[in-house]
Every structure is written in C-alpha cells, then in structure tokens.
Image 1: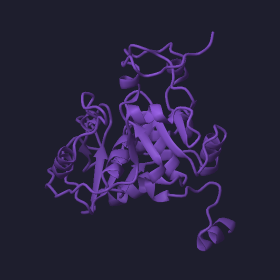
Image 2: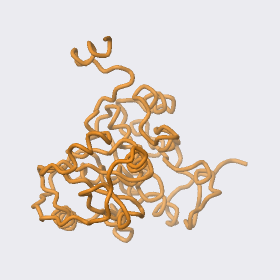
Image 3: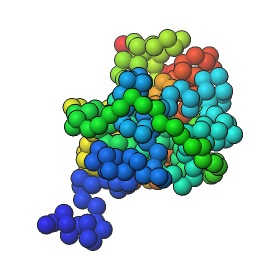
Image 4: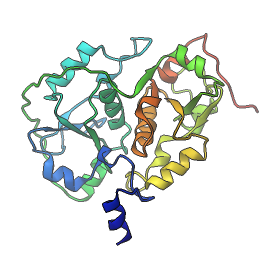
Length: 289
C-alpha cells in the first residue's frame, strides 16, 4: 500500500529507478516485440544465427566503434545514419536492446544512440539469460527489415577525447571513473595493451557490481546509488568513464543515467585504454608495490 501511494504521488522509493523507462522486462518484450514502432536489437557476441528473440535484428558491437578513427573513435553521423536506416530504425522508433552479459554490449548501443540524439532506447533487464530461463519463444529466422530514415540530432551524453581526459586529471570539477577489473588497474592484466595501470585521480567502479550476480538484472536503485556515492560520485558531478574499448564505460554511464544522473554531465572516453595504454604521451599511474 505504501508503494502504491508513492507511485500515485510521484515519489521515488528506494527500490525504484529515477528513469525506469530505460529498462523493460521480459514480459513487456514478449508483448511488444512485434509492435510497428519497436525495433528489438540482439547485440550478443555470438548465438544470433542459432536462436534469438523472434523479430530481433542483429547488431555487431564492433559496428559502432572505429578503432582507427581518433580522436573520438565514433562512426561519422552519415555512417551512423546509414546503419540505423538499414536496421529499420527511424527517429520515432523505440529501440530495445539485449545481450547475454548484463548489458555490457547493449549499453554501448544505448550510449551512442543517445549521443546521436535518439533517446527512446531501453535495455532488457536480465537480457537473453532471463528470456531463455523463462522458456520464452525463440527462433533462428532473420526478419526482413524495411529501411527507415534516421537523422542524427544533437544528443545528451558526451564523448571524451584523450586530451579532455588529460585535462580532467586532478580537476576538482571533474570525476574520472575506471570501469575495468582490478587486474587491469594494477597493470597485471594488459589485454594486449602496451602499458598497464590507471589514470591518476580516477576511481574504480566495476560495471558488473551494479548487477545481481545471478540474474544479471540491475540491482535496486538505492544499492546502485550507494555504490557510486561511496566512491565519491555525486549527482552534481561531471563524470567521464573509461574502460578498454568503451563497453564497460557505457554500462557505468547507463547505470548512472538509470538512477537519475544528468545525462549532459556524462561522457565516455571512447578511445579508452586501448588508446591511452598504447600511446607514449599519456600519463599512467601504477600501483605502488
């Protein structure tokens, strides 16, 4: 009854997210996947050809990051418009994205769509794992998609370049978040990068700590908020997040948006450690023995 009154009064309870529209559950997806203005995206690393949500179209996560296109590593607006058009995504389309890893791939598509001005995007909470655990229907047929015109617009979330990250180091007006593993931060797990370590003044917030470890669904809002607040990230902060190739960073950005952070204050260093650790002019801190 208390929860009902809170909803009627528009009050956010500790377990509800500030932007609940950024998530859909599997029941919603089952009911609306075939809607004319809904485009379901399967962005899993593998498995689409064998089985997927009926009507879902496949997106390779590599299509939305260009590793040889500094300083932003983004597809150009023209390239992005062409991709969205081919996928049947117009400016009025609701995009619903799922993967098999708690949103690590899906969040990067959410981020780039918001960067290019398309905010009507949601992740499937629990993703493919929850869908299959509930034994919901799947098939292997790739749908025939009618192209829709997509036009890039001014977005909300930002992209950060290496120079902007350098300027943010020890800047009290900026917060840097490192979404990588402790092994990467300690410089032990190089992942084929030339130099290991971390960016000075960054704080670690591992992306997967925002998820239930079993279901891979997002934790309640209060738990997520505490995770960031305990690391000194407040709702008023300008935040830039980095990882290795922009996926885990996108997940942290999505999660901050989910709990109500101002999207215009969130930036993804999309060059990420793949750029930073392979350059010779970027300062790196290492763990003191």
